[in-house]
Length: 209
Image (cartoon, rainbow, N blue to C red; front, side, top):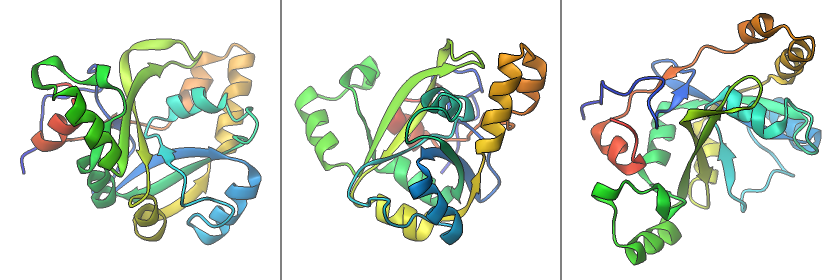
């Protein structure tokens, strides 16, 4: 299955992430009650719920925006989860866009058909404005991936390779920003680049091409 070589890191809809030939890093933020058992077991344990949709974010800056640099209640601990690319791409392949307005007009399906697909799909996709260091929206989009029933179990039991606590990095960047030191803050960011997508996944995600 050929990949789309034209998606660039600043394309309107591109997955920007840290990845290796076999894994990709995504981010989630939780309270210590969920983060600590996950770090110990290197996968998610109770009180993490397998019956609720869990959202994973490949963009470090979007995670920083969402959790307020690890200051928001019940998002005080930020985890970097390395998962298999095989599992990540399975999730993308079995996904549906959460919002009808995100459908690209030239290939949009009948709205009733989309609503049925949304109900049936184990994974949901949202494209939200990417953020800069000051949490200002950028002109291009960042992906969020919601894992529902049928996907959460595979994520927890099969796809997770490792979990690392990156809360200290979040806090350090926040301190640099409060001191007005943007260069030092920027130097702490993980290196992210455009993730290669097959033509099929580009179509399913309505990614830029």
